[in-house]
Length: 298
Ligand code: NAD
Image 1 (tube, rainbow, N blue to C red):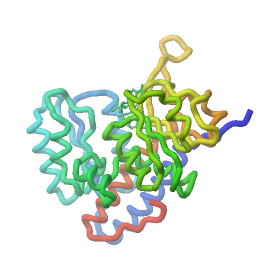
Image 2: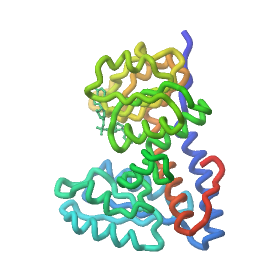
Image 3: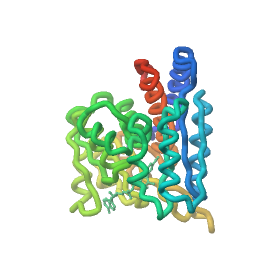
């Protein structure tokens, strides 16, 4: 039985981060300052705290300034928006990231809308979503942009390929579909109400799974030779009593004999998200400094 290739997202992300670091050094020489990323964490959610710490570390490793802001779990929406507004006008801050999810008393949409679109390095602001949909320059959400970079690195020109995106969230599914459309793929978005998902998936040359259901996409649904990007991160019980492990939305072992290539979980899409966040922050810094963004391979 043949086996597909496993895409090493960690290695690819390391390459992207190295290119960002080179771009940061060149930027510092020209602009006489470092790009800056502010990360805001509200409350004590342990998973969010881990993400925020690793974003801060990666930012500093790339040679950028990292500004961490913490608000208590009971902070009001007004408190958070006041902080965002201060960061909007802070000349040392090129990018603002508010870690989601936010506590119940805060409306995420109102907070995202308060971020200056030119500092919205997560690409969640409606202006940036509209820019992506209209084919204009703007910030694109990090996870789907990372997926596209991996697909183009592997497949080159995507034009004319059949792509199926499973999931329609604003963070992954919808922007992913827009990006693939921008590359002239024939794009289908599947979601919780899609009928006969195996048949929809079976026509795809490119499959991007962003659902959040462990191993729901089976190997024998996949057209032989398709390329699969598995965005899902799901925690399931491990063989060893009391332990857990991470799996994707695709049945990895079942898919491997059918695919040309597939991203593993962990070690696939995950590492790309932070790498693209750094890339977006570097882009923002160039725009703020009035410099053209010409970093090779980014
Ligand atoms: P979400 O819950 O907002 O969206 C899930 C989507 O899946 C929905 O649009 C829904 O319609 C669709 N869906 C649900 N059940 C379905 C079914 N049976 N068949 C087809 N579609 C179905 O989730 P999200 O924020 O887009 O995240 C999706 C997954 O990706 C999660 O596992 C999340 O942890 C992961 N994720 C990973 C990264 C990363 O850096 N690797 C980043 C963001 C999200």
